[in-house]
Image (tube, rainbow, N blue to C red; front, side, top):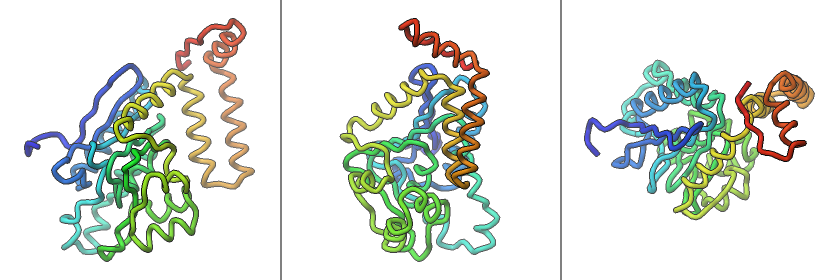
Length: 260
């Protein structure tokens, strides 16, 4: 890859969908600081783009992202690491209002898995390898590997992945609830696009409220989460899409959602 090639590629294959692709194939898409910054900038722009209804986040056939770029860490001291404030980059991805679908081929390790866990749906190829190997180089996960992973798969599986550093297969990740779907390697991106297409055709306000209720409710009590859900449900009764969807059901036709 040319030295001046962009680290992040974006594409709009069809209305309502944007694809964000990590583009460091020479380093198995290792996540150095410029790549993290470029990702955050791409997702910040998506936040404000009302025409985007679903996002596909991916790498290439060899790797989604094989982890952080260790060359940036080997001589770093604690104060320097704190000043980098690298947590803000993944936070930008995680707070994307539109649904984000991570499409994983090859490796999703360390920071790569932590990035994937910022998505809402994870589709993995059958040959994918996922894990948190940081302990094997003397550190630990530092961008969600101990927290998002535990919320996704529970304490005992998260302990196993983080304490051993051993990667797991896509099938095992599916069994433990770490990925949403496993498909043949050649079908990963098309499956992600098909999922994005399905979501993009649905009423955007309802989709946004569903995502917000699930994400915010996960970190609160059941009672508070149910209240959040109920208020979001009630709010949607003010939308034109609610009337259109229900009227189309009775008319036996396809609804035309506008996001109003």
